[in-house]
Amino acid sequence: MKKNKTTKIHRYREIYNILTKYGFSVVADRLPNRMFFKKVFFRKSSKLSENYTRGERLRMALEELGPTYIKLGQLMSTRYDLLPNDIVEELSKLQDDVGEFGLDKARGLFKEEIGKNIEDCFLEFDENPLAAASIGQVYNAKLFSGEEVVIKIRRPNIKNLIEKDLDILDTIAGIIDDYVVKKNVVNFQDIVEEFSTTLRRELDYTMEAQNYENFKEALKENKYAFVPKVFWEFTTKKILVTSKISGIKINNIKELSKNIYNKEKIAYNLAKTYMEQVFVHGFFHADPHPGNLFVVDKEKIGFVDFGMVGYLDDESTKLLMLLLKSSVEKNSEKIVETLYKMDSIPKDTNKMLFKRDINYVLNYYYNLSFDKIDFSDALTDILRITYKHKVRVPSQLIVLIKTIISIEGTAKNLNPRFNLTDVSKDLLDTIKKDKLNSKKIFKKTSSSIHTMLEEVSELPKMLNNIFYKISNDKTTINMNHEGLSKFRKELNSISNKLSLSLIISAIIIGSSTIAQNEAGPQILGMSAIGLIGFLLAGVMGIILIISIIFRSWEIKK
Image: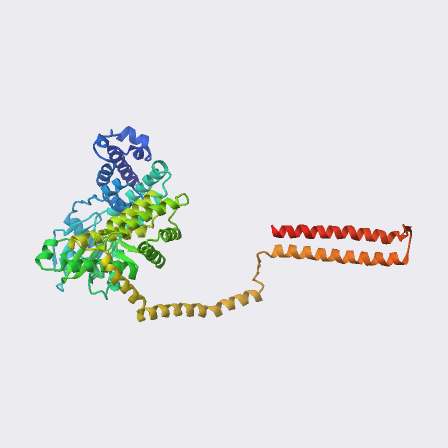
């Protein structure tokens, strides 16, 4: 416990010094125990602030802070909706350069997880890492069956380092929210929390393995997609073994040209497969940098590294389709309405100015010919508008936009004339076919019927419980009818007026009888009792008429 506390203090010291070094003392000075840091670890701010822009300084600081902060920076590198352009553009230059860890550690971790030595599980094992990333290291190997595989081994103690950094990041996010961007529509602590969830999932290789399985199942009918097989007997939270893709990296244009591959067709297949993932299956490979994409069998796209996956639920997909449809129709009113449904527009946003800016983008891009539209620029411009008007964009939509921008860049590298609109028609046909697919309709209907039957089968049991409670006086029924008190009040008023009318009528009849019989003392030749009765009835009649008039006025109001 004491050791953990000491290492955390040491990490705070590093962060404090790096933030101060790059001119972010406004954040560094508010770290916990800042007086202690100032006295013991204080480091004067260099002249970096004068020689570099704020974006460059932030990028350099994140690179020096290490893997967790680099990944956060990469996540924020497309957030034009949250950050100014200059910072976003610099964050896109972040490099994840991490040194290799030793072979002995890799062997030790494998035995610790699997219970066997590497040599006992593989016929061949290449001791030189194929790749070294911030979370894991990858090696080539061959099974005794002769099948080539890749082994991903998680870095030693990386989980502890990341957990420590995430805890500190939460503190820094709180400082940024409280002192730096108090009025920002987005809470940076929420962003860090979501980032933490994503990063923790990446640390668990069994979750990535399951993603491989999900994509393999979803894309099994797509003849242009290839997903490697997972070897579960060698897979744990820290170890992942999959079949090796025998192909050419998608950005190796020289090798693709040498093998006379159709690069235009490959670009199309790449975009089509991604659009299918998004709009048909509702989940997509969210880390499509060229190192994770291969060309297999001339036209197939091979996918690796499913640590990051984006998801879109049915409601989000419907809203996204509505946004796309509204954009095509240049209907800014509908776009704003859809964003309101997504709870994305804050109350203080000037709706008229927001619509004006959207109209400008729509008119600019949709007056261009299809072959000149750059989707990356269009999406970036839209994100800039959302930043300007403080519109909250759902995180999964941001992940999708980042993915589309990356895919379009890769496709244009293959085919400079590529345009994402070329895929649209075929995509819509695929979606229509998928929705009208008899097997899928039957499966969905069967599922609904099954759910309904399950609920119906529970009905007798529920009724039995209700009757049991009623018969044993264990049930109290409370009924609350809206407007009943008002109705009761009206009913009382009518009853009172009716009673008063009957009393007045009785007095008038009684007084008339007495007056005719000339009973009792006389006043002006009329029975005094009868006269008093008539006067009383008159006063009561006037009161009744006034109350009726006042009540009718209240109703009109």
